Image 1 (cartoon, rainbow, N blue to C red):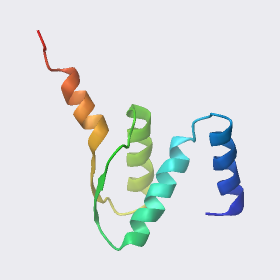
Image 2: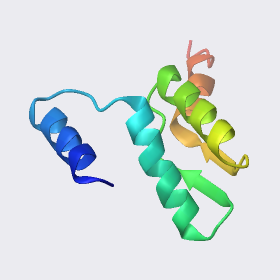
Image 3: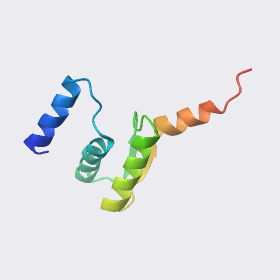
Length: 85
């Protein structure tokens, strides 16, 4: 990552701001590309629907579509429908 991008992320974190989803996704994408694998389990991401949409948009546009599982979003969505009464 270029120094300007690294500094932007560090400053946002220091200021208590959330790093934009597109930036986070590009970091994940770079790690995925560099890994030599084509299947991934990404734990802890996405945290919300906006993260998921950004991931699928960026990854499907810029790369072949990887096999991946976005654990937190789908598990939490599933639990939201469980009737606990």
